[in-house]
Length: 255
Image (spheres, rainbow, N blue to C red):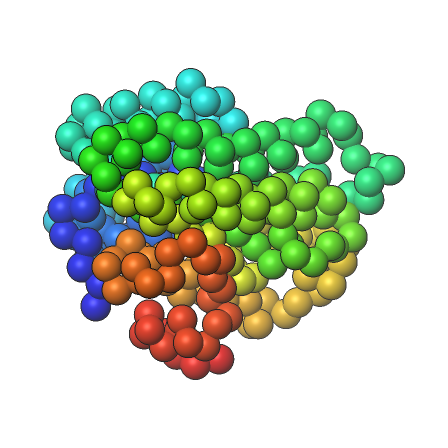
C-alpha cells in the first residue's frame, strides 16, 4: 500500500470523476490535500467524507485557465500547510464535441485554455517552490487522444497533445533540479465526462459499452502510487493505466 503520510498534494478538477477518486485515495494514504474546482462548494461532500475518515483537506475555487487563480491556489496551500510536495493537474473539459466546421471558436479556445494552458499554469505556479526545496512531483493527466485523432474532438485531442509535449519539456528542464514529472493516461473512465461523450454519438469512444470503461479508482490508485518513491525510476515518462507492468507495480488486477 502506498503511504503519503503528511505529504501535501494539490489536485485540480477535484470535485468529481478522476479528481475526486484521487482525493479519496490520497487522503486514505495520509496526504494532506488542497482540492480545487471552479466552485469550491462542489467539493463539500468529498471534504466531509475525508474529514469523517480522519483525513485533512480543504477546497479552493479556481479556474485553472487563469494563472492568477492558480497562483492563489498555490499560495493558499502554502499558507495552510507550509509546503507542497506534489500537484496533480487533472482539471479538464471535453466540450466542444463537434466536427470542426460546426465548432464555436470561443468554445474551442476555452477547451485549450483549460486543458493545456491550465496544466501550464499549474506547473508554472509550483515550480518556483519546488526548485526552492529541490523536490516536487508533477503529474499531468494525459489521454490516448494526445496521440490518436478522433472525429469531433479536435480541441480535446489538440490540447492533450500539447500536454504530452509540455510534460516532456518540463521533465527536461526540471529533472536536474529534483522535480519528478509524469504524464499519465487514465484510459476511458466511467465518469460524468463519459456521459457527455456517449450522448454525443460522435466517434467510436461514444459507442463503448459502459461495462468496458475503467472504474475511477484504478487511475486514482496509479496516480497516488506515482507520488511515492517507488515510482522514481519512471520520472519523465508518459504512462498509461493500460500498461500491464505498471498495473502490476501499482497492485491493480491484470487486464
